[in-house]
Amino acid sequence: MWCAGFSDGDPVGTLGIFKLDGQLATPTVEATKFSVYPNPATSIITIATADVDGYKLSVTDLSGKTVMTKSLNGIENTVDVSSLATGAYFFELTSDSKREVVKILKN
Image (cartoon, rainbow, N blue to C red; front, side, top):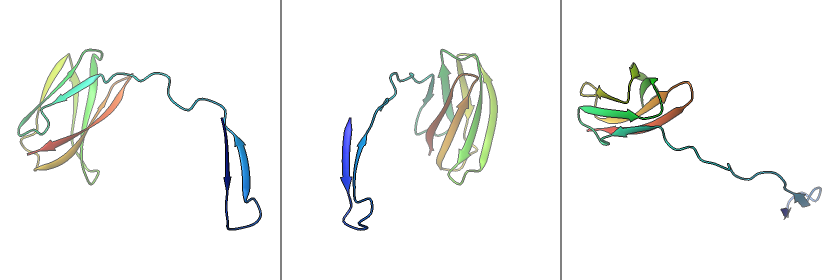
């Protein structure tokens, strides 16, 4: 692919022609391994996965403060969020082969 550009500012380097080669996109997209629901939630959140045996959950608020951490195992787990204040949180789920961040709203 070829592209060109110009600038009406500085006369040095005002015109350029560039050849772009290489890959522009990721050839495959990996499917999500975690399902987190309901969203929004009031008291209990379920985290389900079919591909991961054990993983770590880290919950942070919008200021970046970690408000909860847990180590979880198995296909389906529930997390009690009733003690969290109303607002938005980031659920970071980390295993050996996968890291995913899910935004959760707590009512």
